Length: 168
Image 1 (cartoon, rainbow, N blue to C red):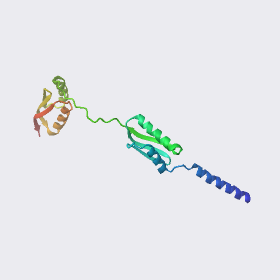
Image 2 (tube, helix red, strand yellow; image 1 turned 45 degrees about the vertical axis):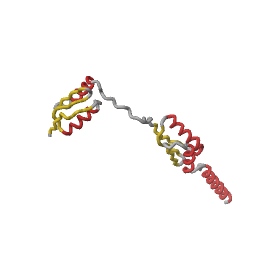
Image 3 (cartoon, rainbow, N blue to C red; image 1 turned 90 degrees about the horizontal axis):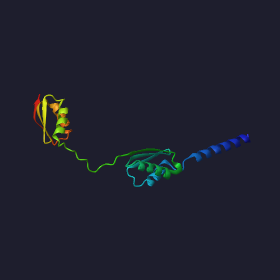
Image 4 (spheres, helix red, strand yellow; image 1 turned 120 degrees about the vertical axis):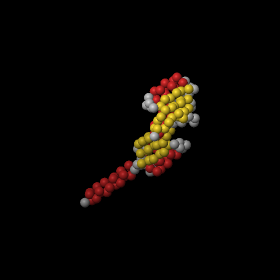
């Protein structure tokens, strides 16, 4: 009987010891704080930790920066990081000034584009002079919006629809 008690005690002690040995050194919250502190100044990056798994998200300007942040997270978390899921998005740099829209000053080129576009509108005619498209004819109200948008997309100086008669 003593043998069974001794075996039971040794078995219980070894199980308790193995559970305490497997436990991570830092809680998820403390690991998250440690990684966030290492990433100080990176306001576009978020860190989450779930059972030792680090999840990085947010945006950065380059692939190099994305990889650098992952490396910093690994180093800061050391042995407490089980894995890293890097969901950081590399965004294109945003220009502070939009590119200017170039208007077409070549009447021949603009006229050819207008003629191609106008094939879908047989009840109206268009003329191009000095970069201005003048439209005449009859058209239903819903189609006027489509016509105007299509002609605007050709980037003329102006689209003049004053010669259009609205068909009801």
